[in-house]
Length: 362
Image (cartoon, rainbow, N blue to C red; front, side, top):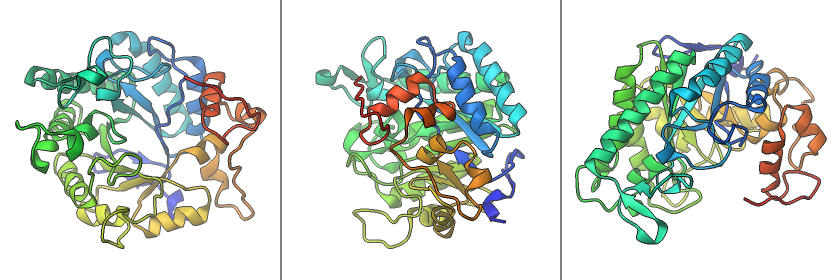
């Protein structure tokens, strides 16, 4: 049996029944106000029956951080009944359910006023965060984490990756501030550290707190370097996280644009205490892909597209003869694995994902 099918216990005391996690996939299936929709419930519960760790999509902690239509909300008590229903249903499957806490920063396209980021950018309707703004951001994350705990989730993951608010502070090219939240890496990492510390202090000791990081530049070259990310990951462990989740295109890969042949996950793994596992997403379809990730330093593999196509991946992928259903997928197959209409239309935006050839914008 693969080691990935064995349980894992986090430093907080929470455990997962296997070491295969569902990625916090954007699925566009929430109601317009961020409350839970039945399609989102079915989508996650179907995967909770097999995956050890199941995360919601990126869930906005405030309307100021709201980034897209159909995004789950954890910003107000109006979201609490749906969150409770979702947490209860996921707990009943046997998985360990968490919520990914999110603020879009300058990518929060549904923010009611100017978007918030590191510095003013009038051309893009962005304003630089004041000291008062940053206090409010921290308070919003803490309130959201407590709301998730009240709902019955096992933990939260602070989304510090993929170009959203915390990445904007971490990335040198996006953060020219000259105050305590800019300058060197200590300053650029300060907001993320303060939020993680505040969340960890507010919730109970047995509540999971993780963080997702973009350890290297992949899509947009904003100056993220593996050496800096190794240090940020080590700080996250010092600040009390239970895990560090790496957002990459190849979970077993080596850093681009830097003189190193050490896999990204290995560099991070070697910087962390033994009781803080590395989670990593990117390009895992088969058990061979999973093994390459493990060999590269990954403790828990995270599935995105393969988790869309195979809600039972942890139960079937290690069987002889398993062949993954790669995109493009038929609408019929996607509906058979509890992909709702909104997620189906979202997948149609990406060429080569759905066989009917329809293109949906927006």
